[in-house]
Length: 344
Ligand SMILES: C[S@@+](CC[C@H](N)C(=O)[O-])C[C@H]1O[C@@H](n2cnc3c(N)ncnc32)[C@H](O)[C@@H]1O
Image 1: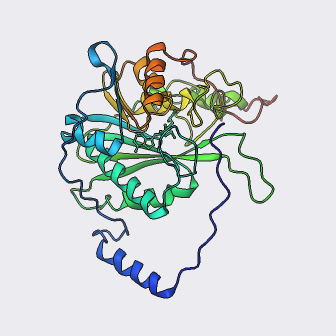
Image 2 (image 1 turned 60 degrees about the horizontal axis):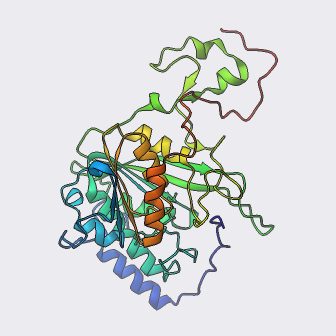
Image 3 (image 1 turned 90 degrees about the horizontal axis):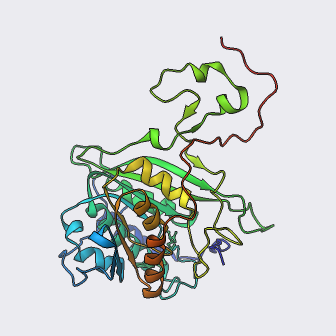
């Protein structure tokens, strides 16, 4: 079954005393820039998971089985902040039947878990490295506020938020009770203090001006990008961007929660280079690994379930479902107009 969002959580009545205590707790942990985000103390970065459970020849791609909070604490590359790119698609606490992980934590526990792995992922990044988080409406606000707590505008700030992208899909869970959910957030943060990688030329699409209007202005533009091409919008959809369900060729049947390969291709191509080191702390069916490996990146994946990890590793070795198209395509939602617009 594909992952589908549950109906909204009901508001629970909270007594005034509890609210007052909560406010007092928040006030104690307020960081300097005013965001109510707790500061997580990572403790010693040392642990037993130093050897991967699976590795491709030359250890270009490695898979570890375990809780990512423990595995990441064990890795020298985390302690020394060596990762160029981290992509995290965590459990959403939607009570999904993951093989081993209990996906229905009390809210406070889920948030503490979230803040722990986020902090470890930030630590894992090199200065200038990119962190992407795939997250639904339920938790996007908490994550952005937490990360903003690390975005003081003063020198020494730890992070910047580069993009708030939306992955838009057409087949959300049907309901008459509210608007049908059709998106997940793809949050992009950059660690301060180094040069960040940005390869727009590797992810271009055909501009609407070119595909709908055949507008000469886009063919004659001089912005450093090829004629008729543009950097994609921050809402992502189109061919091969659908949820992985039904008879989708990419679908791995034991997985409830797969992302499309084209999503990971956009993230990996735009924000890392060949030979870079990529981390996915929630490997699942292995989409990040398979795409990173196919695109010539080094890869570390962590997965709590031993069975998922083994299947993900097999997938990394067997390669992409289909070649990643090299030619930019159009995401225009209108057909070509008959009357072409003349250049001014
Ligand atoms: C949303 S899925 C990831 C899906 C993945 N992006 C894909 O395309 O297949 C989350 C995965 O994280 C795993 N997981 C949950 N908690 C974990 C933890 N603490 N450490 C490592 N893996 C965990 C679950 O078993 C599940 O396979």
